[in-house]
Length: 625
Image (cartoon, rainbow, N blue to C red; front, top):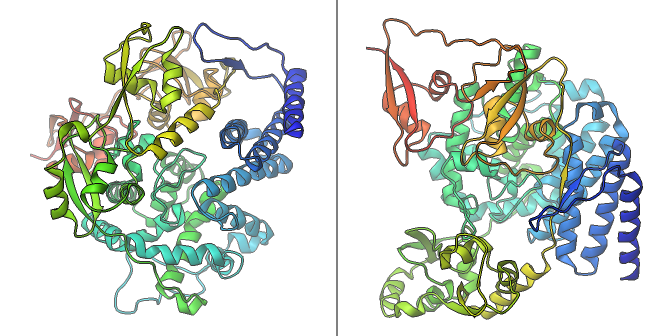
């Protein structure tokens, strides 16, 4: 413990020596820290120190502090990974890779995978190292050495080639990566019978099943440092665009069935955008807009010819192809694995909030089994903020559930605690005590602000599983305060003009980044947001775009900038223009199918860069008479 405290003190001294600005505490209880004006090397050394502190905390069993310091290290790492000037600094790049690798190992342990088992993120890191050991000629070689002859009678919809990069990935899985690939092969049995029929229904190749393998190892609880979640590793913005919603109570991205359908639609949209499965798969891992930009800049049309891709994306497609090759004929590559039994279940629709302990008693099961069957449920019950929830229960227990559930009194289906507010107590303290978010306490008690009165009672939702309740309270009590770095807004970007974007209600930095084809990191840097992702409606954000970018409907030129405007070209006189009002449940795919047009055209006609639509939106549709 003494060593750990000394390490913290040393880190504080490092920050104090290099900082040119003092800490500032605003009126609210969130502390804001101005990013120290240190050199890049010094900042990255601080990140390395955070990693050491995190590892020490983890060894001592302090999971909350470990998570805090890992997150702090990654905030700095991600900040510099997005800066162009580091691309030539091999030492800095290697340090950043080491930080990401240490964090991915930590996430692997959080994901419940053995300490010595590699996750998908680890595999990409090892492949990067293998890639460095190749000669430039071998690395760039795209010559097909063996044609796709895995299935003679049926031509695969996704072409499978064997070039140097794919062979490298196969050799790695046969050697150092054998343990992780063996586990992946075992887990194919979990969801194969669920995922492949959905892929077929959505009209995409069933080989995309193995994309989930290299994304998450079929772990529905997997999460990445980029805040991607679930089997298909959706980030929040993209998931929302395809109907994967979330709250404090649930996250559809963790639901294998819902997320698979969303992933199939997303991949179908990407294929329609690129007309090439390799580019579509690369776009799934990386920014589609940035891939298109590279294709235009370097005048290439094939994935293998794309230069200057991030290492993970460069190895993503070869790793996928290698995974398909091996799983189609595992014995050929020395794998003799029996897939695990499929996860099967019945479903029932519940139209009220119910504790999983109650459900477990109705079907002669237990709380942990119900949690495993319902990875989309983040808490101990069906979501109280939804009108209904499709609940997964053990196979062949549907009738038992319906009979036994009908006998459960309403006041026993969900448990509340009446908390007496004591003098000096705050919502924050009560939230930590019970492990329930402040937002949910306010919602249950119809509280608008944060004022609570001594002597009054608060209704607190509380799990019937006492062990789980204690775990929630313990995790909440240990959660450290989060700090946010701030920087000065950028006043000039070479070769670009400044425009003003006014934030709309519900917009996130990810939404805005996709809209303009820039990165979240660039927006944060331009506006002095530092590591913060917090924005609010009507906030004005500086967006630095190349010349002639005013075709974006949501952007307003800065009055200080000499920005010209452009107008959309009129459609042909032989075509008709309609205005369609988006209805609840509509997706761009549904609307495109309704009018017999493509998603790409709808987005072009309406100056949209993403697939986000909401009820009430009006879309311009151009059709032939």
